[in-house]
Amino acid sequence: MTTVIRYSDAELAEFKELILKKLETAQGEYDQLHAMISGKDGNDISDTSPTFKVLEEGASVLSKEELGRQAQRQLKFIRDLKAALVRIENKTYGICRETGKLISKERLRAVPHATLSIEAKKNRDKK
Image 1 (spheres, rainbow, N blue to C red):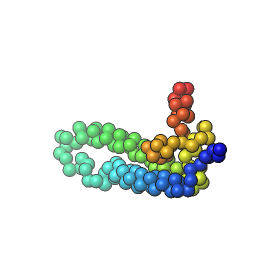
Image 2: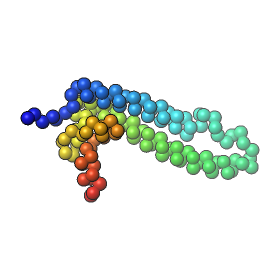
Image 3: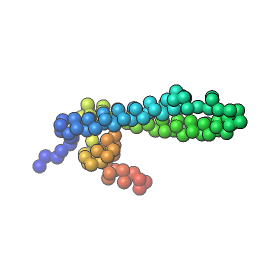
Image 4: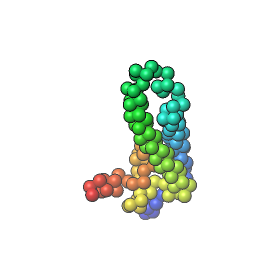
């Protein structure tokens, strides 16, 4: 009996399509966050009266900090998706980096940038 050590080219092509769609969506969301942080959306406090400026500036700072955190998470997600595309090109995509076994298709469809199988992830969480 032959042990499967990697996904077929057809399966890799399916995952590549999925990742490219997610990457496009993620990039669009990042661009929106970046525009909101930089104030390019025109929704700032420059046109409010001085009485409300102090209150709105405080809220604006908190909002920009949260947007910044969201943008950082989105950038990490984008980097992870791009790394997954590299693994597809190298034909190492879907192989658990700890166990060396194939990660289930269901997991990869849900988390296409996954590098750990459920088994390895559970073992890691126990530590």
